[in-house]
Image (tube, rainbow, N blue to C red; front, side, top):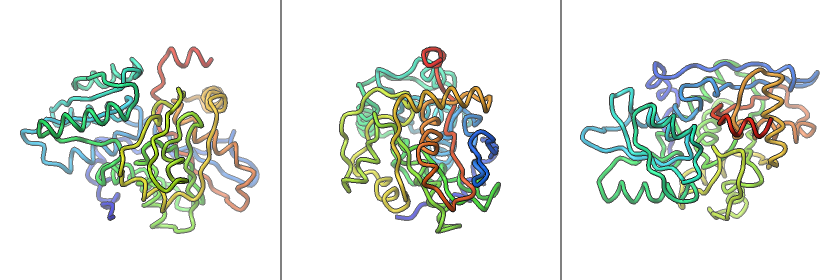
Length: 313
């Protein structure tokens, strides 16, 4: 399994994305640890997903092909945005429970939204079925080397901004983000510690790592809708995550909600539930991180609906 160069991917997509800040957090830092937040909530479309989608779109021959994707929202917005940079549009499948705010964002870039199923995996399998029957280009949110390499551009930026990072916390859904970032950062520093983080209510990949195979057990509702849901059987990310993740951490809905509020109050930024998962995970186990001086936490997105935010507040 060879992941394409994330450095080359960054060269390919750099003019369509922001180089987001790696900002030190006074709230999270201590006398022995410097904690930095990689603010992908400020990225195009409000999430890191723009990186992988753009890299896939600009690595593919889409001439005459319909493009299909499936998403709880962020990946769909990213694919829709990436296609719009080429004056194209796509067909994006979302689960029935997808947030209205995320559906509106997908449509704002010109793509069509199709509601299907109760879970991201339901929508994903329907999108795959449609793409195979109609000879479309399917862009997976994680099960694709070009998408993984695109997400890995985050690792390139982090290393360029602070080459002495000792550990990184990343929220895990399908595993595309942590696969790309960990692959790159471990190539630069094999000793860096990679922490995979998920909500207790939906931790399919982390549970699957423990079982050594993908097991799509039932997920409960979670504030981390951006990382929720099942994982495609046979996904390449399972083996990559198994290779590169050093430690996993699960957090509760109360812990996620608390960090959404604390981040607004202290960092003065709005983040979504999936981003709060990584922050909450760091706080949960930071006493176990002795000897690790510089910690990075990927704030993976800021696409939280106003109704959700209101209910938390």
